Amino acid sequence: MQSRYFVGSLLIAGALGFLVTSSMRTGSLKSIPVAQLRAADKKPDNFIGQRLRMVGFVGSEKVVKVPRQTEQGVVSEHSFSVIEGKSTVQVSYTDALPDTFRAGGPVQVDGIYVAPGVMKADHVLTKCPSKYEAEEKAKLKNLKKGDEKTARNPETKALNS
Image (cartoon, rainbow, N blue to C red; front, top):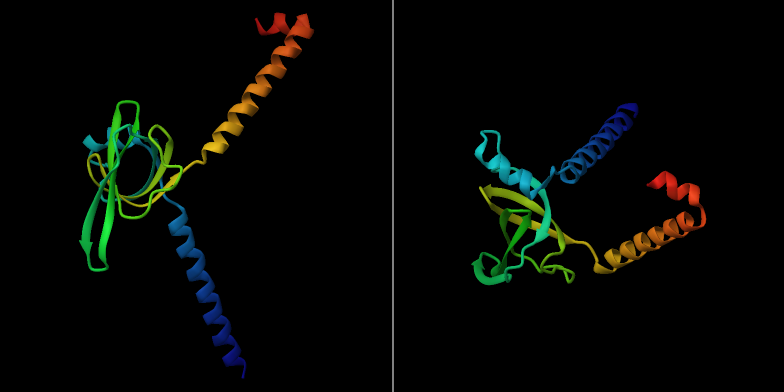
């Protein structure tokens, strides 16, 4: 009787351990800016073949949509660039792009870095434009409050100079 409980407990503990470790693996991607990714291309310890999270900005070029035949049928493959400064990475992605995907907008791309300057993405995430607007308004509001305090208190103005 006790051995059944022991075996059952062991199976439950093993299943929980598996779930925890598998969720940690998928949630712990290296987040790498485009410039750092491209700078590492010439080094022996580059990121080619690794699964990672790339962060940058959507390039200004038009997104190219190409139909591809797969085992599941015809899928649309999107091709676009992600930039940071003078560094660029071409990305291919076979799912629907987010509604907030736009040229110049910040983007986070998860996938495999297959070759220098080329990434095969399985997840694309953009930040909601309304969040940017709210953040900008909050920053401007804080700046204005700071200016008002400085204008009312000459000592603060002298300290900030």
